[in-house]
Image 1 (cartoon, rainbow, N blue to C red):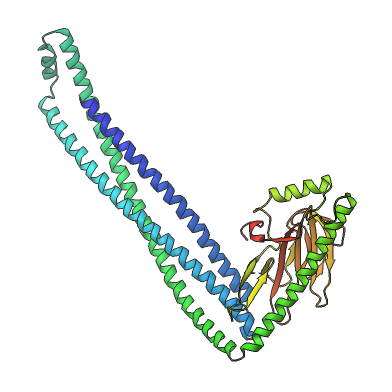
Image 2 (cartoon, one colour; image 1 turned 90 degrees about the horizontal axis):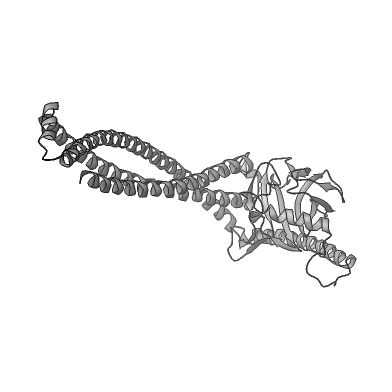
Length: 410
């Protein structure tokens, strides 16, 4: 009976313990993922301050300042949101931990009461003589054997109860230590968020001031945005024209239709393209240090939401004279030098192209084979904005791709 009851309780506690452990493990994984995101946003803010907010902001145009500040506000809001999620998850973990502590305390109380009861019984029957008499008073050998087994089982149960009390005491101490650490972590997150919200309020006020300044001469600023977009679109069309010409040439050499929408690849190019695809999401950044100022896609202008800004790639803010590097093995297909002097390098990876815009120096020439992370030039610093911005694009068969899906943590 004792053994059966012990087995039932033991299995119940094991199942409860396993459920709690799995819950904690799932929460721990989620907490780890949130912490990684939070650290990423903190790193991004640090980079933004270093790359976009050094020196006197009045030297930059109002448009550049509002664009930079909008970006910073967005990252700051993301950081606050992630920190709130972490604090909320910690609150759930703390509550779950407190429930577990209460359960362990109740269990420990029952174990101690049962153990105390056994000690009293043991004291009353502690002499060896009483055990011998208990055995000798058996009516037959079978009964004596059963009584001997009972005495052994009772002693073993008493020992297990003692060990269970020790284990529960240790588990309780461990949970209490964990609870204190969780509360400390939560308070740290709350303090960090309080500071982040104060900084956000200052940035939002600066944002309002800039927007007010823009409204005074809105037509001029909108004209500037449209002109910049037209220049970008013109260069993008030229890049796509070059890729289409390369596609046409490849199909002509292979004796295929000129209307084909894909490249006719040599075995070597097929292998290169296959390796490029295999590294999707793992490609290195085209610069060692930077922050993505403009992402892929179409979005409203920060000063007038009716005006759309289109980007076929990403614009990465980086350090002055930052070195540009190839994101993968390939062949330099084209080097462009537009009238404004912002040089462009196009590297072919089979039916894929990586494009690097806004460069001041170029270390490679057409036809060169380059390897992953090989230096290909330097980023140009704008005389008007005082910023070093690299335009980075990826094309597949002449169609722009989202670089964030290809480059690691872009």
